[in-house]
Length: 148
Image (cartoon, rainbow, N blue to C red; front, top):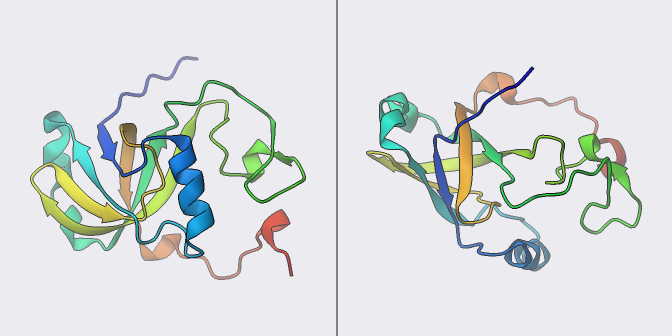
């Protein structure tokens, strides 16, 4: 079975290289919450943005377009032990698909101003979904990330 996915837009961020993202991760304990950028949606998909400005947060699905290597074991940042790729956010995945939640600040035509950007400039957007109440989970376990 072949699945064809076409980008609906592009992420514009301050991160030009993977090292820029690593530097930010090391510099700010809050992570990427304050990092602003824009989502530029292709004109053919602008109509699909109707009513999006009423949401505070969006789920972005994107392509790790610079990743070329698939790995099943990866070493996450700050970890000494290898972990299974599916228990991580590593870009070295079988389908190179990433997901993140961003805060929506403003929309103007096909441009969405957001914060929480942790992707490279030029990253292709595959889909946008509103973050809704049903997405909020409270009784969660963080697996190997739980260091209590």
